[in-house]
Image 1 (cartoon, rainbow, N blue to C red):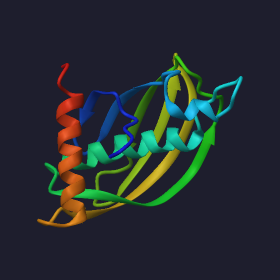
Image 2 (cartoon, one colour):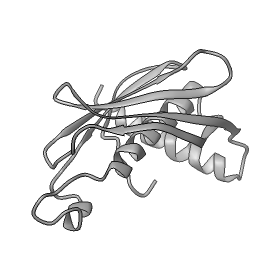
Image 3 (tube, rainbow, N blue to C red):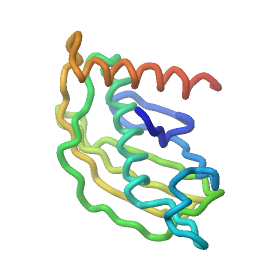
Length: 150
C-alpha cells in the first residue's frame, strides 16, 4: 500500500470486528489542495481507512491465506468534516458469521460519529505469485507493524 490510513490496530476479534486509529496530521499532502484556508480530510480517504481496516481484519482472520476484494459500498454517510489534529477511531464489524463478508464501518472523532458505511467483500485465495498473494504479504507486514506497540 502506498498510502496507509491506519496508524494503529487497537483491537481485533478475528472474523468479527476490528478497531483502528488514524491520526490526521496537518502535514499530510492532501491538505495542500483540500481546501486551502479550511483544510478538510476528504471523505474518500475516510472510506479508504474503512477499507484498509476491513482488509486487515479479513487477512488476519484467514492467516493471510485470503484477501478481500471490495465489490460493494453502500449507505455511506458523512456527518461532519474531519480536520487536521483529529484522531479517527474506526470500527468495522462483520454482519453475521456465515461466508459473506459484509462489514458495518463507522468513524468517530472525540466520541462523535463523523462517517459510516457498509462494505461488501468477496474472498480471494492468496495463491503463490498472484496479486492476491502480494496484497496478503503487504497486509501481513502492515499488521505486524501496527500491532508492535501492544
